[in-house]
Image (cartoon, rainbow, N blue to C red; front, side, top):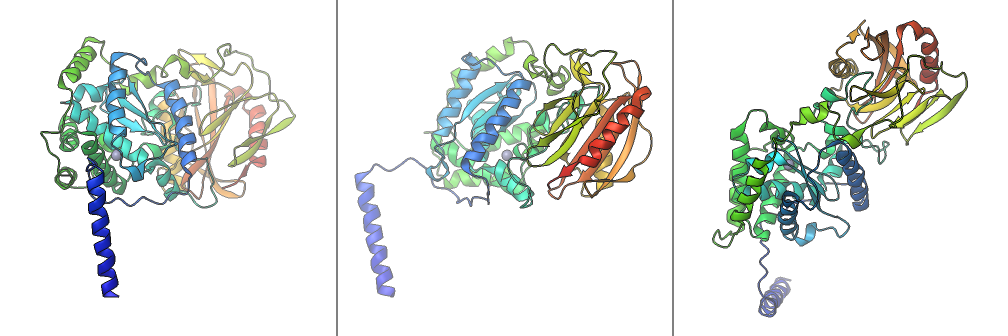
Length: 477
Ligand SMILES: [Zn+2]
């Protein structure tokens, strides 16, 4: 036995030695091993989910033009890093793409399957190309390790199937703004699974990020430097990226230790300083980038409109028809809605409203009569607390509303639920408006909600429609 093993080992040593003679030593560095987290999604799910989410981002965020100097430059740094991904973490289906968001905060985020966004503020704040590459390498690591769908895997019960990765309260906020609700950390309707990572995953992304940098010819210690720099900036910009990429503890030491393991020869690590300086100068000559909040307030980029351009808010809206049709919300729910209501879906919610009740008001997508059904990340395990937080978010983005009463018990498809009522004078209609909110907790930790909206003087008619909806509701989670 022992002899066999020794013999095999000798053969192996010999083979490796022979291989090294034949092939020039690869520059690929070794470093710490990374164990891939469990993931019940397929690689093509990553690609699909990422593509869908990217469409949302691009509809709502101002992206610097393709082919411009800044975009070209970031693309070039990105390519170089992608070539440094260790072989075992490459997926031929993945398509790494790099875009610059014209936003002030230091931030960057990655979507499954390859889309990667760097805020302009990140480039402006970086001290060198290496530091910028550090942020990007860390994000590329999250993509390559498939952390978005791994996190969704962890969070989902077996019954709650793909692709209902849910997270955000997106748009559709009652006669008011889409704006401030977005700043809840689930920006622009993207699932939080793709935006905020656990400390374990952060540790992995730091380690793989360092390896990618070393392989690409950057000094991984610049990743540690960039984290330090962002932390020291504090203020409005700094914490944005750090809050979604929490420090797993001794972050700098770990990255620097990894750099030593990778045996980085700082003389060989290179970066294009002149080009980096040119890009920074170009950015400084541009008008100051808007903040994320300003972008949200303006409803994102113009293509982010939710309703057809010809839609108009009208004073008179036809009553809910007495005939109903069934709407099926993916594999999550079905509900009967008045046949004359139109529907507008986004990732996590569907708005139902009659013609004349939806459109733009002062640059924001609003609706005055109808209902919304959707899911949102519950901010608590407790239904009452999660519901109150959700209602608070509604109140924050619709400041004219007041909560009229505390929660009452209700049921939604047999599930324990709560209901409450908000009221206020709508700026859009100039009339008093009643908003009824129903919430229930799903097993996967999401809050499922249904909201009815109607002017107070028509609430009787509309309550009938809302009751029919509620009674017909079937939730499959
Ligand atoms: Zn991270």
